[in-house]
Amino acid sequence: MVAVISPDGRCVFANASFERVLGLARRSVLRGSVFEWFIEAQKLRTTVAAVASNQFATSRLEAQLRKPGSAGGDPLLPIHVHVIVNQMDDPGLVVVELVEIEQQSRQDREERALGQVQANKELIRNLAHEIKNPLGGIRGSAQLLEMELESKPLTEYTQVIIKEADRLQALVDRLLAPHRLPHVVGDLNIHEVCERVRTLVLAEFPRGLRLQRDYDVSIPEFRGDREQLIQAVLNITQNAAQVLAERIHDGDAVITLRTRTARQVTLGKLRYRLALELHVQDNGPGVPESIRDRIFYPLVTGRDGGSGLGLTLAQTFVQQHLGTIECESEPGKTTFKIVIPLP
Image (cartoon, rainbow, N blue to C red; front, side, top):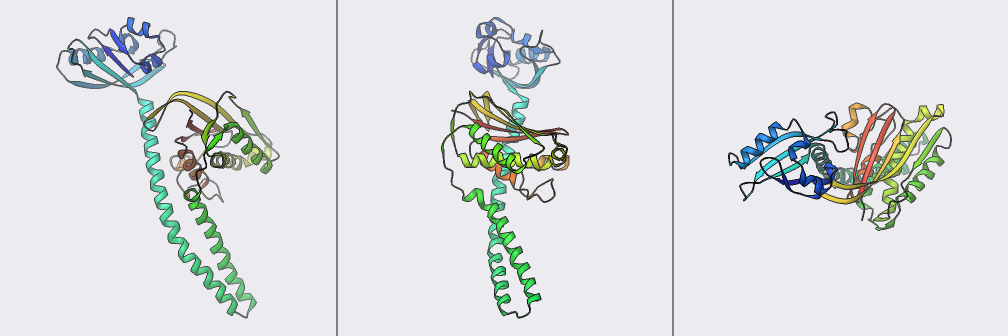
């Protein structure tokens, strides 16, 4: 959000983002004083005056912008922003740039998550290959040993070795799956993805679980890998159903699949005009606080018997669509939000 203002706060230029956040038409923005849109604007007035008078070439501060649409600019509903004030060639004007602190924090989280995913990929790939090679040797040796044994009770031990080797092999294959699967791109409808997931989950949990639809049918088709997105949404929804075991037993378990569009969305460092938001919400006990910050890490799970791979794979598949996935959780309400850019 960028504006060019005079030292008294009169706005001579504002970009579209500035107008959108203020909720005002350009004519209204250019008529008013920028300082009127801030709560406790005196510090900003002083900073603008100092930069305009050449005391500083640039200055930064944090401020609170009145939230658009709030009656009289209700100070209880501010937008926290980082303000950067810079000089211009024209000594009578300064450039004011506003960055929403929440947006900046979200971008930082996304960058950290992306970096963590890349590190996880390398770790998983290397670890899986290190495990895979000796596993074949262990299983083959157990089979050869079994052929030499005449005592049937002893062959039970070799069978244990073979079965455990197979179990570990299956785990390794799941770890490597995202790196092996081709990215098959085609036109897809997100509601076809949701309906497929809904059918699969209800077939697995036919009683005690209500899987609600809350769709925005105006969402356009987009280019993506249908099978990958089905798997991503299925992993999240199955996780939700599994933690709802007690509520399913009581008959009041609810999972909601909600789709919406969002405008002017920043993902990573790119801004998109339109994006899909898919929410998977459940009324379960919530994600344990001890693992809340690590739920997308491989092999991290809060459920007995869980592999800790479902959400890791979901995150990988969503990021391959240039999207993000986040989780907000409290007892009685957990929401996974997938955001993917639309054409």
